[in-house]
Amino acid sequence: MNERKPSSSGKPAHRGPAPGGAKKKTARRPKGGVNVRRIPNQPGWELVPPRGAVERADDLLQVHDMIAHGEIEIAMDELRWLLGGCPEFIEAHAVLGELALAENDLALARAHFGLAFQVGQQAIEQRTLAVPLPYARPANQAFFSCGKGLVWCLLKQQKRHMAQAVVNQLLECDPSDPLKVADLLAQPPV
Image (cartoon, rainbow, N blue to C red; front, side, top):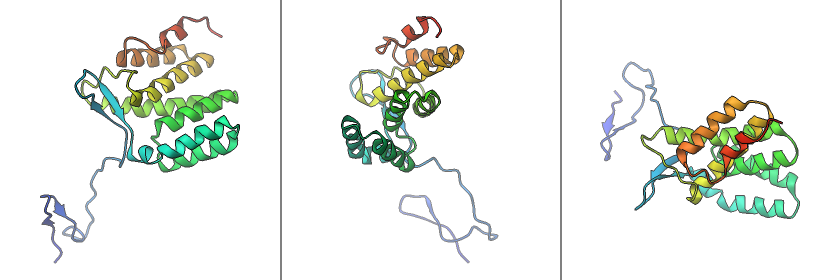
């Protein structure tokens, strides 16, 4: 009979099907998601990118080089490939959102900015007291840029109530409003 024995870590090692023949299903945390951590020796928190994003950082630098040389289609293909391997890559979504805005594709820009903002927001919500999340930390800047892009898109789509909710969340993270997202709400509707 197959049985489960503790491993050296004290967790049961899988040794075949559970008694009765049925495989036991366990809930797992998605591998490599965005997290937050306390900033060392300072008040506040910073986003921790997933391992896949860290592994693809050099690829993202190449994408910026492609864009600088006018190779927009190739850069977009590379960004989609990067997101295929790491869908929570906030910086890749930020760049795709900006490229979509440059092409006047408001729906696509909103989708990328919104997804990246949601990924960051979910990481923050999983930790108690994960604010402030200062923009000054480089790890947080793509999240704030996506939030600003999302607000801009929502206002263009006349979804002021939704834009206000995003602004409120950004201000909760960093009340100094370094990207002046609250100013976007003060502008007359387009």
